[in-house]
Amino acid sequence: MVFYLQMEREILNLINNSSEVLIITHVNPDGDTLGCASALKSYIGQKADILIQIKDNFEFPSTYNFLPFLKEAKNFSTLTDCYDLIITVDVASIDRIINKARTIFEKTENTIVIDHHKTNSGFGKINCIKGGVSSTAEVMFDLFEKLNINITQEMAVGLYSGLLTDTGCFKYESVTPHTFEIAQKLSESGINTSQIADLCYTNKPKNMILFQNYLVSNAVFCLNDKIAYTLITKDIIEKYGAKDEYTEGICETLRSIQGVETAFVLKETAQGTKVSIRTKELDATKISSKFQGGGHKRAAGCTIKTNINSAKEKLLEEAKNLLNYD
Ligand SMILES: [Mn+2]
Image 1 (tube, rainbow, N blue to C red):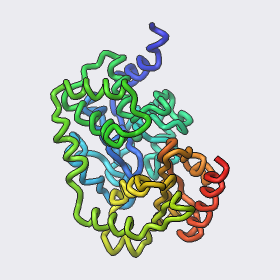
Image 2: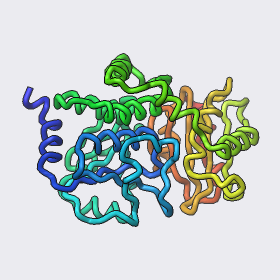
Image 3: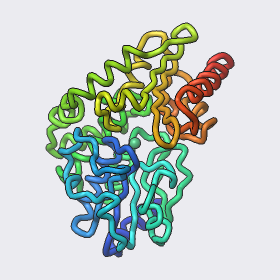
Image 4: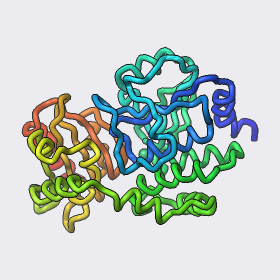
């Protein structure tokens, strides 16, 4: 029993013995990373800060405004250097910690990585990683439960939001009876699950929907509709004033079309072309890993360091090979 709980106990000891804790979300934060950061901050209390990694400007997806403590989160310009413990939530690799945060992370002795990405190599001093589990929220719930930590209603709001959004409303393959069991327990804490679902899904900016409709209308289909993709150019981003969060869900929409096996969304960025991959049967990481990316079986991503058109060609070539021989 003692050995079984060793990792969990070490995490608790580190949290208890630290005086300043920094919780780091991944770049382009989603409901899982933000929900987990919110829940963890709620548990740790005053001595914990959240860093939401947003490049250039400080704005996180307004959808998640309702999550406790996010309004007082740090950004790169308000981040100080006084932490003796860093905890990353839902961060798949050290490359996903950027700018000043990376420097701080690398010189901090005590680091904890809490995650559910199979591709996570375990870059922390302590790694609480359950690859393939539905969400980091699920990993975190189990961690709290093993440590007999009472999950308050405030913590449950964040955890439920992570669970709901990372499972696509309990639709994905990663959902198990245990996932539902967690949802049940969170619901029993007294949170308003239907209100959380509304806040996550029926509260989108107008331009986000218009932008997404444009991209779906302009999708290209090939290989007998097995592949669908759409291109997000800088012009389109500018036209709709699109924030990073506006691309959320487009790839899933393309994948939801009958006959489509693999969907791509390609986006022009300063670093090259950012690619999202969603599949029905194919292991999406087989494609993303060709371009040093990562992710899950049905949802993966990578950045191809070329312009959008040549990135598209490279990607289609890989996808066609995999689809033909699989
Ligand atoms: Mn996640």
